[in-house]
Each structure stands twice: as C-alpha cells, then as structure tokens.
Image 1: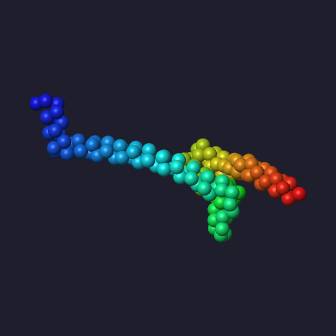
Image 2: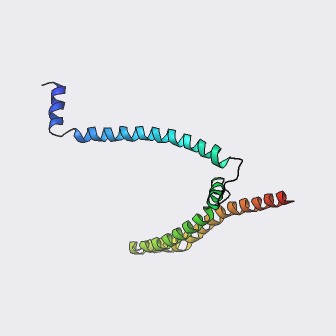
Length: 148
C-alpha cells in the first residue's frame, strides 16, 4: 500500500479530517486578516481626510462631539484609569487574604500585599495621572494664549 492510499484510508475513517478543517480555518482567518487590514487602512485614511481633517465644521451636536473625540480633544483615559485603580486596589487587597491559608511565611506575604500592594498601585496611578495633568494644563495654556 502506498503512502497516498494509506492517507486516503485514514481520511475515509475521519482520522485526518480535523487536521484538514483546522488548516482550512487558519487559512480562512489569515485571508480575512489580510482583507481586514486593507479595509482598515482605507477606512482610516477616509475618516481622517473626509471627517477629522475636514475644514468644514460638522452640523449637529453629535457630529461635533464625534469630530472632537476623533481629534482627541475629548479624553477618556482619566476615567478609565480611575476605574482600573479601584479594581486593582480591591483585587490586591482581596488577593492578600489568599496568603493566610499558606501559613508560616504566608502571613508576611499577606501583610506585604495588604499594605504595600495598594501603595504601589497608588504611586503608579499618580504617576500616570501627572501626565494627564500636564497635558490638561498645557492645553489650558494653549487655549488661553489663543484667546488673547
């Protein structure tokens, strides 16, 4: 029996069908990935030149808000960082209690996570918020100099 005949026999019993379907799915995903990349490039260029960089002001409150949002005049990062800070702080405090079950050195880990965890998260949060405050203050200075 040749290798080809053996492969046909395996495929006829369903032995190789999952492999072939996985390869087909990966090929389809790869092709769709290329199509999505091309469409995203075209869409990004069109949105930028026809809407964001357009010299005309949009009509309507929503379109003005959308243009400001796409021009990054409206920033969401402050709210996202606050939620992330609260989530991580609560998570670290709750996670610290898992070290109590370890016994021995687990109590020291519990104390370290309970005390140092929120402090470290707060320092990281404040450092990232400083960048936002610098941006906001710079924007206010630029807006005030334009008014004069």
